[in-house]
Length: 97
Length: 173
Image 1 (cartoon, each protein chain N blue to C red):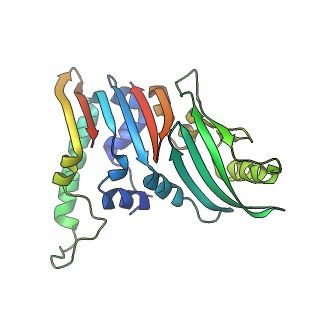
Image 2: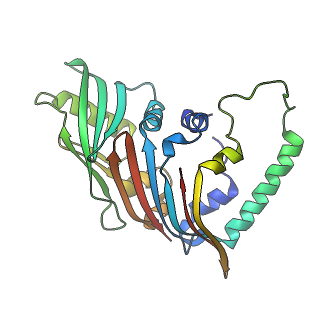
């Protein structure tokens, strides 16, 4: 794992506290469909290629933070999903606590 | 080299089309510890022995620099930068930092060494003199393979507060 990524995971993204994102993110239909295909391929890979789970091993300090911990750090003031011809739009106002 | 996921590759190939309609502003404060993790990840075989960023209040950023310079040997300097202005495409491509304090009268060998390292190891678009550092953002993005992202940058500004460097970015496609 890259040391910067490791640091972000180990510190629960604390060093990005105060981040703010505001505006509209538009994604083309092509991008959404490529994303769905990639997601499905990843699921198939997980089924066939995943190593044996090591249930007795303790989690390393650099494992991906739990989704619930990440969600606790987010402040979401506005999320509005809409579509237009050929694209998906997300109006968003959010930040990291 | 890891394979880039197909959606990300499509986005990087033609961001203007894939993100058309996007208009977003990002304020990204990067803490001192994370900044220095990024600097620590630099290649080991350089004459730079120490490289540490220390953002201050009042829009000043200290760079603690330790280098092995010809004639002078190992030297350490604290160089203070003040980020100035912002980048906008296509009129203002340079990210400019005034050097307000740091290099001394006899520091020409250090500056020459740094200029040599920049010319040899880093992509074109980085300019260092005794009184400023300038980064040509389109040239640096192009050399990293992200040329198509350049027209999306409506505004890019760097400022600093105590222990935090703040990137403000306005993207529009």
